[in-house]
Image 1 (cartoon, rainbow, N blue to C red):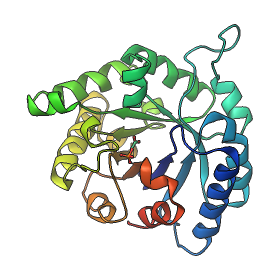
Image 2 (image 1 turned 30 degrees about the vertical axis):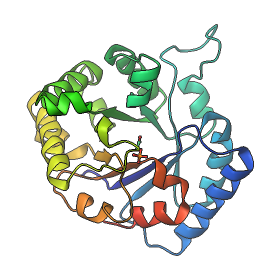
Image 3 (image 1 turned 180 degrees about the horizontal axis):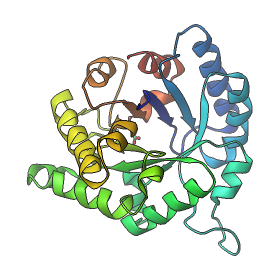
Length: 252
Ligand code: PGA
């Protein structure tokens, strides 16, 4: 059965000492909350993965990366492989975030390869999909999401599909303070779950956690997470404040 999940995406924020303070504050704050029905994941920039992974060993949370190379190993200057992530104790990895699609021209095919690399290392991919404002306003948003899912992840076997997490992040909601309504989010989440049901079967569809991302905060998390097909959130800005982040994680 699908798990409740809250993942914090720190993006390219924090210097090392601030990252140290933040992850320790998260670990401390988690001690006073009952988060037994939610998996909490912290995704810092690459240089802080070892720090976060060390703290997470005694804490009640997991370590995630924000990206991975589509290549295996070798002469790829500046890249970080799934094997390297595994050696640092990374259990989850975001792939295909809209910022990577936009600024680094990542394609659905790149994302499919990254997912394969991660699954080979037993790292859970958190695959992001979402439409732009234009695509929403023109009414094409479900088609856009269908293509992202079909090209990015539907090459997997049913067994591998069940090992993945999907995050629906409408681009117009990311970092804008303009959250999708719970009805808008639920519509797309149900659509994604139905795509999985049609491609595989209902058992697989019920195993895959689908997270919402885009200006999720302590005020709106509860009503979003209460929707039938919303299994948690991928949190950007609010994950940089430990109290807000943990409050979101206890919103189920
Ligand atoms: P936001 O970012 O919560 O700051 O909108 C979410 C994300 O990009 O993962």
